[in-house]
Length: 96
Length: 159
Length: 131
Image 1: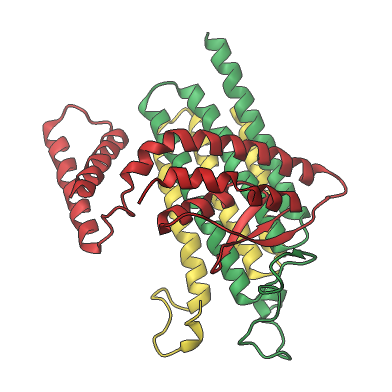
Image 2: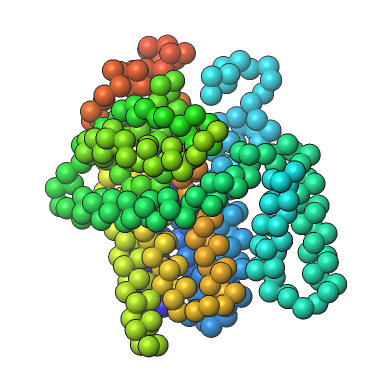
């Protein structure tokens, strides 16, 4: 049963990767990578049961948080070209 | 002050659950130290207030979350049917859904509930409502009826 | 009794896997970015939720199931935030939903105010290779 769940998750990851490669816009790619990260959390959790190593859940817990921060960081970097926020001397970001 | 105490208690329970050490006195006190450090840092950041640590809403969530979960399951089935339908019968709709929540926290809860329900996502906050993109027009119609809005306002509680 | 719990958890995991695959297919089939988000949220809520609930049933009342519950809670709390941020960023950058019944009176569907009419769209939005 866990093997079946693993296979379903892996197939979904492949589908998300295809969308990340095809695009077309950069937001499609970010969406696909975000979905891929969520599937990774599930995959780690299920793999912990397949290999009977329950410690994997802790890794899944941390990955769930990192995935969110990562998505937000990529979007912020894409928008401002820096992680520090909008540059002070550019007012074309004022309405964002 | 009560928010800081509540945040500290919540963090310590989280520490206990994640670590699983119940007996070793040294480790328990080290956990308490890290909890206090976290609360102090949060106080310095100025996020320990009614909005950052919503105590009342946490209690009232017992009645709101089951209803939300049921709505999520229902709309999941609807969207899954649309995706698996060979004709892909979508009619994307963009509309402004008005809200009646007074606080920022209530509006965030409403917008997040809309996004969590498949078939509708909140795209932006407009002046008079939330800009919602829906997979089909009926999703907007359901939101316009305002049941979710009423429930979120009740969940938000008085000021 | 154990058999019943096993059956429930297997049913949950199977449902979750089915919804995951459906969402994956939806991400590929949907015509534009804004409709793809709906398919992705299908995977985030029902797919992840059902699989994690099934795993919780397998684990029983232990610290492991508490951790699984926390994973589910974090996914549910952070999912809508990143989805909303993504959709908002796309709309602000000028990506417009296709074939959409606009009930806002055209406020959000027109060209961006600070972009000149004849400017070509930003390469991010049409997916050009910008090497």
